[in-house]
Image (cartoon, rainbow, N blue to C red; front, side):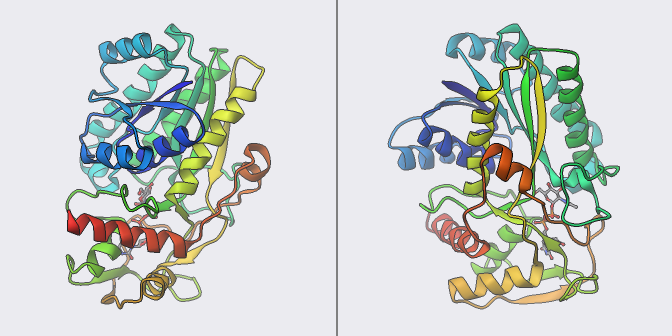
Amino acid sequence: MKILVTGGAGFIGSHTVVELVNAGYEPVIIDNFSNSETSVLDGLRQILGREVICYSEDCNNADALHRIFRDEQIEGVIHFAAYKAVGESVEQPLKYYRNNLDSTMLLLETMQQYGVRNFVFSSSCTVYGQPDQLPVTEATPRKPAQSPYGNTKAICEDIIRDTVAAKAPIRAVALRYFNPIGAHPSGLIGELPLGVPSNLVPFITQAAAGMREKITIFGSDYNTPDGTCIRDYIHVVDLARAHVQALRLLDRQEADSFYDIFNVGTGNGNTVLELIKTFEEVNNLKLNYAIGPRRAGDVEQIYAQVDKVNNVMGWKAELTAADSLRDAWRWQQNLIKK
Ligand code: UD1
């Protein structure tokens, strides 16, 4: 069964391509390589021992989408392709709204034209803001988005919900990712941040590699056990597998129209300091870090309640933060050798 994977050369997309092949699906990547590199395809080839179909096109290009749906006989879509830099989205909101909303609408329209039903959407725990109660369940009210990026995730969820509610023959799942980290255990694919990373783990691995002088911990005066923020860090391979389970859930649906939302996390929170210490322990090295001021827009703590995804999708995180940090470091070391 051919599954169109938009943004399939990206961090989560590429790991999902591997898991799709492992599960017997045939992924078809569409990626404009605006935030990824074609070397990812070499990594995929080495892991899988074969080529993956890849179109170097923009998923906002209606003609390209038509051609691919028609020529490849697409039977499902996983939509990763989106701009995702929180700070940039504040500076260039229209770029984010135009790209992230248009692609989602165009995909839903094209799916209906070609009778394709199954749609998995990359959402984010950012839609919860700083929740009033922890852990967050899917019923926890969303908060107004802190950034245009976060708002595109909330609006896309609503676009999908409303499309399904209008009885479009679409079966959709939105996965609210917590904090994806790590890399494929082979060390052949992983995260490829452009420029100075803003996310914690790429910053840690680059600091460990000597590319950054030190890590700044953004705030140590939060109301948490060690004063640093808490997140639910999930191994990207576990997250990738959740997409396979989501497709299986959609395949099992009998109704023509279906929409549901799932938190995808481990259910455990870790502080920034805990993550740094675990990185040092599992990789047997020392990091240079210092406490700095809080970063604007950061929430104090968030972690998932994962009962729904466990019970309904039959998916559970199997890898630990230690696994993630070992794999992320292996990937960073391979990047340096290249
Ligand atoms: C951020 C976004 C989230 C988005 C995700 C995409 C915000 C508020 N959230 O998540 O919407 O889906 O990226 O990847 O921007 N930290 C440091 N030092 C650093 C970097 C990070 O202390 O150099 C801390 C942060 O303060 C935070 C934790 O590490 O407490 C995780 O940060 P990060 O990896 O950037 O992810 P989020 O901010 O949780």
